Length: 105
Image (tube, rainbow, N blue to C red; front, side):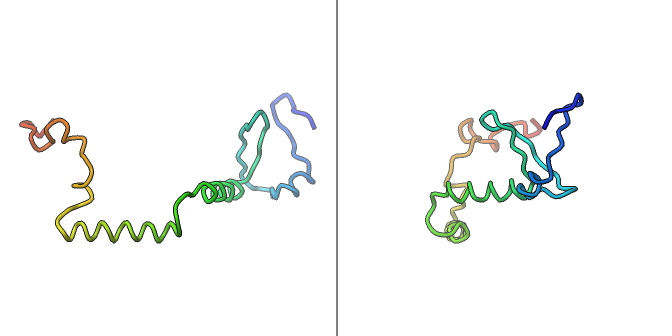
């Protein structure tokens, strides 16, 4: 295989078949450890999902954890405490946005 004077390369049919690349597929190309990697968007999405799943350090289901967080926020709001009240606001360090005498700024 060679690169023509316009920088184009033809991917041989057997390589396209082995890689699951079909005519008309949009492919992404990047360099990884000095190698040129060509993958379809579907292959990229599947790889990212695998990598995220492998890196996940939570316990149980992401959906279950999100639902638990939302329930905790709802309980806090029902008690008059919002999630925003529980974390410092950048404006608080400067006296708060409400203390600004010129609200147009």
